[in-house]
Amino acid sequence: MKLTTVSRKHVLVIVLLLTSVYFVAQIIIGLVIGSLALLSDAGHMLIDVCGLVMALLAISFSQKAATPKRTYGFYRAEILTSLLNSLFLILLSFYILYEAYQRILSPSEIGGYPIILVASIGLGINLLGIILLRPYTKFNESNASYHDKEGNVREEKNLNIHGAYLEIFADTIGSVGVILAGLIIVLTKFYQVDALISIGIAIFILPRTWSLLRKSIHILIEGTPSHLCHEEIKNSILNVKGVTGVFDLHIWTITSGIYALSAHVVIMDNNRSREILQEINSILEKNFKINHATIQLEPYHESNKI
Image (tube, rainbow, N blue to C red):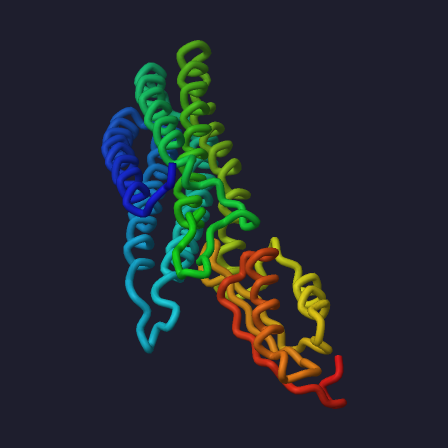
């Protein structure tokens, strides 16, 4: 089944509504019973809501046509929202760690049964969100989408949706942790476990969020996509018959699954320029899934021998 932009939007809206309703309920109950574990989980839910909203906005922006001022359109909206989402979640995690430390020093009595009930509902909602989003979020740069020769967009494993999925997955683990905290409180009256579980949730999400943040920054500074080797691509072009040199080779990501390349290629025979250019573009498309290539052919002379 083809995962269309329309279906992505519908799934995101459904998950957003479920997450928003549960967030409101969780924050109210967390405040009433004074559970930091519930409040920290609610904080993650808030970031989920923000991430889902930004994912929807990014999809809408990416559909806007390119303009003379924005020649690539609004594809980078996905990466920018992913960056903001990561920053918000990192800041929230550090805040939770600080609050948890304060709770360990000064524990307060908390009801275990409300924690178990609320967290169990959250676990069900998170699992449903994972099931709905999973087909759209298996982000892997080596098999991500791209534009084909006719200009059609292949299915995109969206980095921003991947971020929202990552947060929901973390919340699922967090919900399990909160349920365990509730059980421990009911059975042992060890109230510090509420703060300890909050610390565990924050520590669990930080490395994954940091990874997403690094990917977003790498794309924004136009680094070479991690699954593509600069030297391998250069050698592939050099192996084309009639090519004697390649210089000023740049490879970057426009947005998830859409890659661009520019290079100066030195050729021996200008009469074969069209044939050589077609072969280079074919290699880039078939072997590296690069469909936005700008190749400047240069006549051979000793000064550009490479």
